[in-house]
Image (cartoon, rainbow, N blue to C red; front, side, top):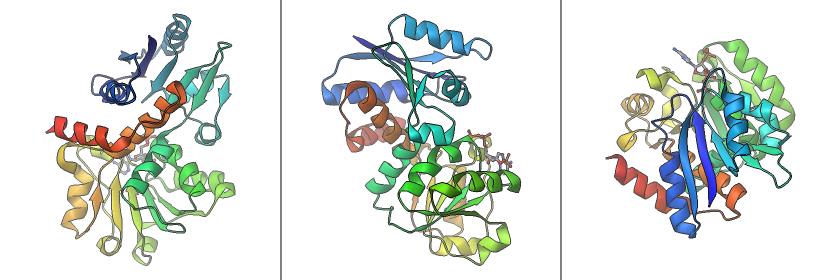
Length: 271
Ligand code: ATR
């Protein structure tokens, strides 16, 4: 039976084992997928041991995505662009192939929602790992990206790095108030502390709002805030989570599972 695991620290909260179990049932594949706690000191050795024992693939989550990227022998284009890896596959010759399916997962979810139109104006909040992971696929989809970050220099440096991939710029709060956006994506880690980035309320009059964080009934701090500011269409990141997992599953098992049925089961189970 093919062995897989998700590695992170903390890891008990991970929904990946359940998602991959549901994918396996849906596609009639037999596999084992566990959650593993990565050690800050020994993560690389843990991962090498895992593959040496015959594992076929791994998902990597916070805080190890950059370290997994560095450990891998080969990388996909989106992984190279993000310099972070969320999916590893052991090749037949033993080398480790690194991919980053986070951005594809987001794009798949935006397509599911019919929220992805070419040349849209997309405002992304945050310039950390979550943003880096999704910029390349969004720019490939011809999205016109504006980055806003508390630490402006980080946004500027990301925009410079990705300028070769498409249209990308930065904005500060007052510039934002003079623009209109089709889509706002929250990629900050603030929600984990129950907080959110406050924006000029005018930006919510036209935009759909997507939060990469997820929670029961889409009640994330950011989505609750934007609803109070009059935003009409809001979605959380559970679909992105299932989407990124579906591309990892395809890389490993050769079949792309359907997102919708699994998303519906997870939503029901989270209540
Ligand atoms: P992740 O991998 O989740 O993206 P990260 O790389 O640490 O985590 O990035 C966190 C993002 O949330 C950053 O954009 C960060 O802004 P800074 O670059 O200014 O730190 C943003 N963030 C975290 N706490 C924040 C806060 N209190 N206010 C505004 N932005 C915050």
